Length: 79
Image (cartoon, rainbow, N blue to C red; front, side):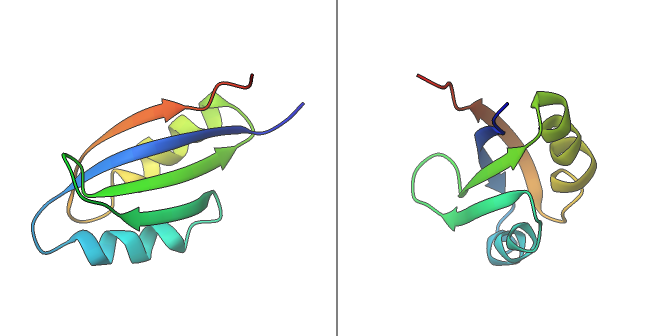
């Protein structure tokens, strides 16, 4: 069985975006984390064993990073 992957769109508080990206890039589950323009500040590509594993990373680690205002998770659907 292959790994589950998703994109997480992150809105950060002003002045925290660079630090959020640095913290995300330290996580083993995060393949990429980039600052973007538009309605969100950061897009991170995250991998995990399954949806539950990724959900735990989001709730217990990503949401606890100082400056994270909200997230929106978009799972990649294999085709």
